[in-house]
Length: 289
Image 1 (cartoon, helix red, strand yellow):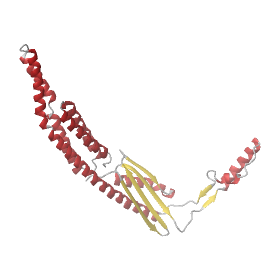
Image 2 (cartoon, helix red, strand yellow; image 1 turned 180 degrees about the horizontal axis):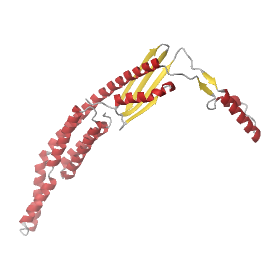
Image 3 (cartoon, helix red, strand yellow; image 1 turned 90 degrees about the vertical axis):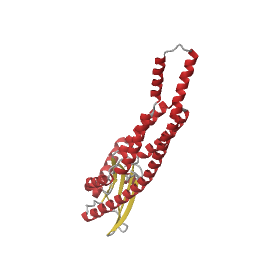
Image 4 (tube, one colour; image 1 turned 30 degrees about the vertical axis):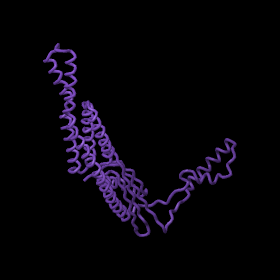
C-alpha cells in the first residue's frame, strides 16, 4: 500500500499538574529532515527521540513540537544581578568617557539586554519523559494513519492515469498502417515524376529505411512494460517512492521517442495526452514515501 509523505498528528495528555502536547507535521523530502522543538530539560534525550522518529517515518521533512504547559504554575524568572551590574558599570563608564548623558529609561534598557533575566533551571524528570515519549509515539501513529489515507488517494490517481495512458497506447495501432502507406504513396509519386530512370534496389533500400525509422513497436513494448512495472511496484513494495520516480522518467523517454517518430497528426495528439497524464504522475510521485 502506498503512503504519502504528507501527514499530521496532534495529541495532548495530562500528567499530574501539567499538560503535554505533541504536534507533528510532515511534508515530502528526498531524505529524513527532522526539525525538533522541545523544552531544554529534554535535550539530552534528543538523539533517542530522533532515532524513534526516523524508524517510524523513514523519509520526509518532519516538524516536531513538544510543549509542556502548567496551567496552575507560573514560570519563575530571576534577575541575574551580576549581568545587570556589569552592564550598568560598562554603560556608566562609556557615558562618562564620551560625555554622553545616561538615558532616562536606562533601567528599562538594561532589563532588555541578554542574560539579564534567567529562567529557573528545571531538571529532567524520567517519569515525565516516559510520558512525553509515549505521547510522541501515539502521535507518530496518528501521522502514519494520515499518510496511509493520503496514500490511498495517490493510489487511485496513479491507477486512473496509468489506465488512460494504456488506452492511449493501444489506440496508436490504428494509425500505424495508414502512416506507412502514406510514406509508400509519397515515394511512388516521386518515382512517377522521374519516370523509369531510377534504381529499383535503391528504392527498396530507402523504403525499408523509412519503415524502420517510423517503426514504434519497440517503444510501445517498452512503455507497456514500464506501465506494468509501475503498477507492480505500487502494490508490492513498502516504500516505493524513489523507484516510482525512476520508472516515471523511463516512461517519459519512451513517450518522447514515440512523439519524435510519430509523423502523424493523430499520433502526435495521443503523445500530448500521454505527456499530460505522465506529468500529473510525476508531480504526485514526489509525495510517495
